[in-house]
Image (cartoon, rainbow, N blue to C red):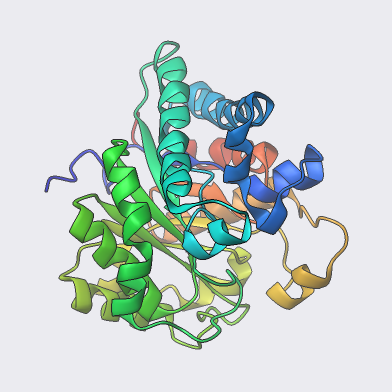
Length: 317
């Protein structure tokens, strides 16, 4: 399988989106049971809200001449969460396919306005909590669990899969194997704690090595998400071979721990300008990072600040 169209070192920087669920809940007043943004696909108003969200971010990429990688609203669109929401398996598969179709329509709109690369990524989230490792499945069980979602994305002609907020190595391995079985590229993004380690306690370096070994290096690249840059910058080793596999980051604006975020009643959106400068410093130290987005508490303001701070460090789209 060729993945030459995916983000890569020496190519343009790609913006991705921000904290979809926190944006919809705290800024737009949407009701998202179980944080399931894909449930909005059921209604015309919900679909319009999702399209507006992606267009806001895509327009930033257009204005800066950067690539744009859309991560779908399907973080919760797997079997256990679908069951909680009353989705039958065929309805869940249809929702996953519909998410790709919606993003493809956004891509058409963006491409009509400017010549930037735009990628559509089907999002797979963890079977459990995105902050807590919990009782991890085996890689084999995770492969089986996530296979249906990977197949739906392949059928809908997504460009790739983004596995977001992976908290442990076996589940990340299983998602990568599910993508490999379906024949679609995948990027694996790990949640890290304030010490820069996965919630499972594993180091980021170990997680990359083990998943690569178990999958024949199948992931196109790895990412870091759901932590403030100050939580993980100290574990990034400039010049180390494993760092060549870290291609993106989706940081939180907040310096709070996951436990503190869970207990907070108000959204901590940090300082967008400061976050942009922290991204710039990380890119200067680690130029292999080419995908830039946000996670909990971030919105289009943070992405705009990141784009302005970092655009001069990348190739033209």
